[in-house]
Image (cartoon, rainbow, N blue to C red; front, side):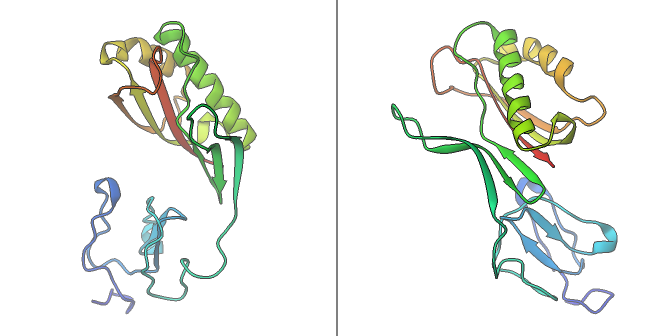
Length: 186
């Protein structure tokens, strides 16, 4: 299938999270490790994915040297904890791991502590909460939702709120009431 511009076009595609690239959109490239999908540049279609072995057009972003990632606050293995980076910057995108508080206090104090830690990690990556793209929130009990939201709403940049999901989960340690993971632009 060719687009109106004579370029190979997507016949159909359902992309992560239910986003869809419309049929007939010209393919430039689809990348997931680089987190972008470009179809028709004039339509500015862009979404997050991972590197697929697909490339039609003038260049293949999946081949050649990959852009390096900067990692911040690497946690080494101790007491059964995983070896992880708390923040990774690749290109103009900052990815934070799930951030947890100390397992003491109520949902208000724990949420404040998590958001303070997120601010610190974003600052290390040279960005801030005004550039948040996504947020995932895990609560130990959904009855804490409104109290958590009061703290979140006081903290979040009201002009630039991220997309957000909030679910109940069994958190990793007793006493933890909240965990938040965010992605931000630089």
